Length: 201
Image (cartoon, rainbow, N blue to C red; front, side):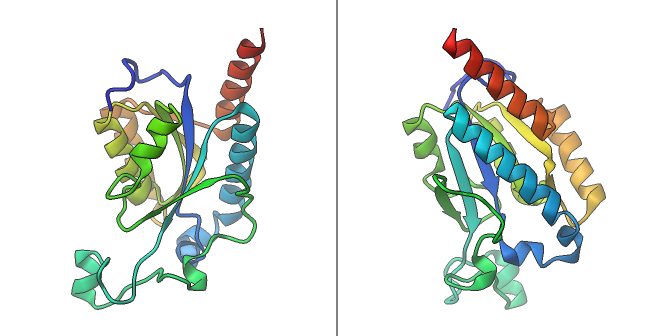
């Protein structure tokens, strides 16, 4: 997209909430993080709405007929997160009123989805990422954002991995290799608040 010249330009962000679904949080490694992640994602979504930042909720959904399955799923003969099932649905405590939904079939929210078009339509030239899992879907989405020249901030206290070390490694990679920002939820909300205040003066 070639949207910006700087890895720190977050004047026109969009918030991506990734895979906040019942099926993923059935994993014991993520269950422990559910309350913190959903609370911070709700805070981010509310702050984004106040600041006029687009909120995009990304959900993984597959078809039972195997037409959308990954190579690993096909090899194992086991699919998941099927259309219309409870596991594919959002966590009940999420507050997503007004969010735009993107359905994906792979780790990256960009792969074969309308995400790029949505960002262009809303003139969003940077991303804030939250959700699960840090070492898979967050990292894959961040990598494709880097390829599209979109600055990224990861809300580190609003994402998690079932493998904590893999999650930490992913964050380090995003920070060092792609110069993507690692920020707490409160830092991101404060940034949006300051931007709104400047617009009003």
